[in-house]
Length: 386
Image (spheres, rainbow, N blue to C red):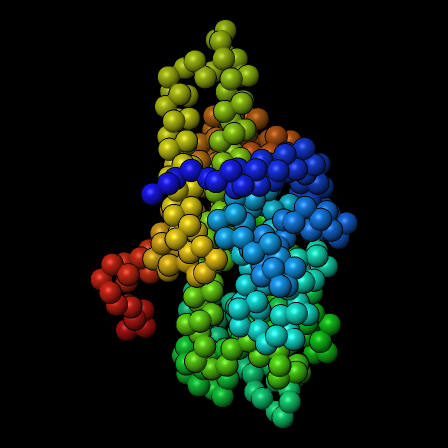
């Protein structure tokens, strides 16, 4: 059992860190102030560096590296900001993996190379007004009519809505109840009948678009079917990659906070000396470092065990749950150590604190992960409806 990164992984990590730390701070400020996503010109730069296709199929333009390599890069970007890292998350851990694994050859060949080239983003559209945690209650309907799939319904809390060029839409087929009726369809943004609501104003996640989606007789080719009714388990199996991506984005927020506050406490002087010389500060730093390192190890274990395949559900749930919780704790502690400077927008720590809360809501809430972990321990699912 080797806990060290390979030479190639360390080189990739250093390349991502150098790019993120030198090129992206100004962009992070722009994204935070305007709430606009990363501009297309920057997407092309990400693509030129190979950062958008790290774990994508080489036959589709990617590098074909393990998921761990993608998460190493993602963490370095997220240390700067969630906004500048979000395209890496979407391209390396998001629904593109569903298109790549489940889509028909023509769809894969149309979508994945564009994503890798920075010409397209794909978002996942799962939640609805009455189906968030209770995802199998979703009501958006799909039916097959000849060579078309017709979709009617509405979606909520879609990160990327209105900005991404493509959507993996979870739908109910044939009115079949529960998980048995759920499948997924790929829908292009410009498809007639697909409309978007106003952009949500969230506590954090500036630069990550979020809006309602409405499907009114939306028709797509039947070849856009990713998986039909009964395919819910395969969709959620692939979603474990996204769960680890979620955990990695949270880790980046925490690790960035730790790096920033470590520099601050060595610089900031009170009572005639740097505040790092006070034992209370030393203890707080040590506690933060322990949490960040434990979080990283949980993610790396799950990713390393998965290789280029699917992560284990239990390992993914543990990683996501733990990292989501400690990110809130680490950013809160860092903000407190910085005092007024931590609370001021100018210095960025309050942004990290706000962003830390989003990851424990998105992709399956913290408490739901704990239910999943308990289910894994006892070897059975728990019926929340009884």
